Length: 115
Length: 226
Ligand SMILES: Nc1nc2c(ncn2[C@@H]2O[C@H](COP(=O)(O)OP(=O)(O)OP(=O)(O)O)[C@@H](O)[C@H]2O)c(=O)[nH]1
Ligand SMILES: [Mg+2]
Ligand SMILES: [Zn+2]
Image (cartoon, rainbow over all chains, first blue to last red; front, side, top):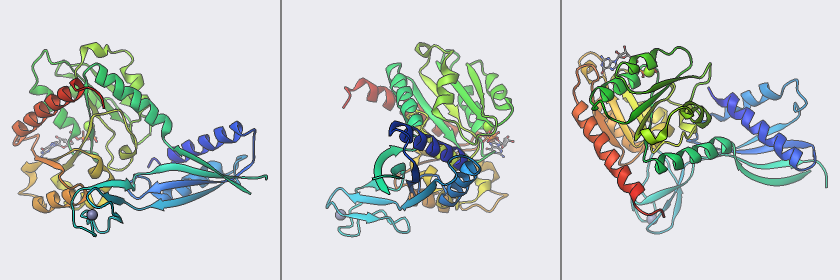
């Protein structure tokens, strides 16, 4: 599983951001994980805890937001969650839809101490 | 407590290198294909059959990724084209930096096809862009027709599904129509080929697919960007 290397990339990004902001104390990091990103949220949590344990970053919390696969209809603009692999637009039944979420593997925010 | 937005891809460093590679491949007219499957589905076998069918002067090179051993590179090297093994030493996928390093000693001017065999794994390689023009997923009939539904990410992201080991159909319970249907539920319109690297059934269609894909790539890079 590659969740440990993903966890490591997240920690490195947090460290870089913290340094860039003059060494602020980061309490938590918010991460978006798409349903089809190839990353299992539970495994990522586990990998992250193992990674920061017994280090200076042990109190850093990982907050995962799961993002389901969503599509936008190019015919009518409707946005919908793909449920049970139903790709056609539920509003107008068009098959012309494009992905808008579900692949993310992104750092969304940091919660830092201070004013 | 203060919430500050970051908006950064976790794999932004990988994506940056992959984008550089993609630009380089386009500049040099190299079609790069990333072959992904679970262990043993037949990636190396399909590469062997592919190289075997190419003329000696074909400007093709191969990178094979494995956690350990250079067995695959040795198998592929028999055909006389440049091959390099990437041994990941435990990592379950190739990443863009490994590709960048492996290419450093090759003259890209001399190539127009680069075939990359990823580490045997249907999950992790889906997250790592290698700068390829297309991912190709190989599924053998011994693995079960439900795999597209269990590993949707890789089937969604791959342009082509190669169903391999057709010769085993009499011996394993595998509903090929259901496999095709499942793949297209996950990825509507997905291209699907059925082959056997052992009996060579279906390899003509595979060769044609490659020719068509290479022609499409040449057209794509000849067209003005935008
Ligand atoms: N019966 C049958 N066996 C095949 C076929 N293609 C490959 N094999 C066999 O399946 C085994 C695995 O094939 P490989 O080509 O090494 O598979 P791979 O995907 O490269 O495996 P890894 O690199 O270890 O992930 C070998 O013993 C092949 O001879 C096929 O079409 N039919
Ligand atoms: Mg192999
Ligand atoms: Zn619609």
